[in-house]
Length: 265
Image (tube, rainbow, N blue to C red):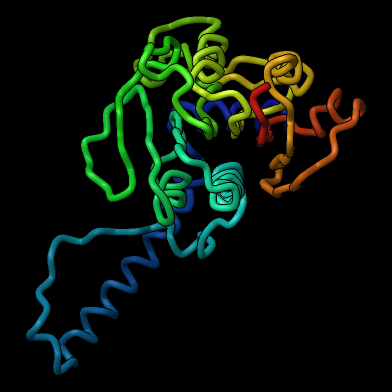
């Protein structure tokens, strides 16, 4: 019974309905009402009340039940880890493809210039960041042998699924990998992260790759310098040695995150 309930819950969440969040919102209503009236009473007793008027209420009903922040998970660890490595190796030109702008890209932009290619346009002008629109399932000739450092963090798994209004293509990730290989100069560094676990497609969110399949894709094209992964609990395992047993088990991940630092052969 429990596995069925869990699957129903996961399906509801994926359709934008989170029963736990909804329940926390409901039980947060009495707290909001109580705090609202206490605050109003305090206002009329305050000597500073003349400086503030009340606007429309903006109830934040579930915030009291959350932690102060999140220092784990795929994005937190991959963004910080790869940004630290780029700081250390100091490439001449670093190009990013589709990684999170308000995470990894922002980290890197705090200490150097970074160019960003994404299928979706970004109109904002930010110091140290150059935004360009491109479909990486096909590569422009101007990008051939373009950079000595390339990143694609938690993006490749989306290629060809239409999630971001990209063209539907079953093998879109292969085209993406081929494009990135052409963009990167020989002996250049390639930072790649993708979900790992039992290989499958969860349309139209993402693909999950098996470790064995990923290594097959890299063979003859890249040498793996460092491998790290984030497990199903969101904890980082840094610079892990890859042995056949762990590879075949996908490091015991159902939906983990593999983080590769590789050199183009």
